[in-house]
Length: 60
Image 1: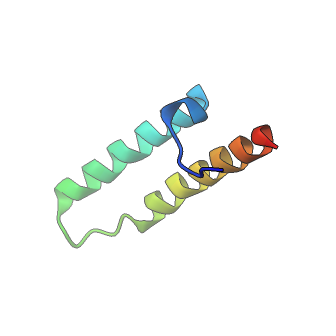
Image 2: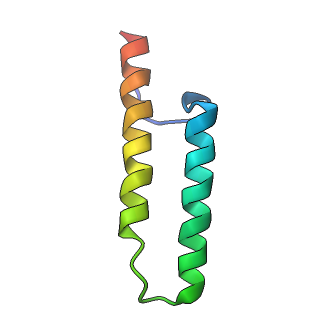
């Protein structure tokens, strides 16, 4: 069983939320190298974990 996620493993809402978060990370990145983006990264990881759990439940 593979834990690799593909774009088809995400719902449309999750894809949109990730896109917004990545855009916010990029905006913060423009501000400089010392800006902390770990809070946004954690939010993306939570979305990925939800998709991973859903994928595992569907395979069982």
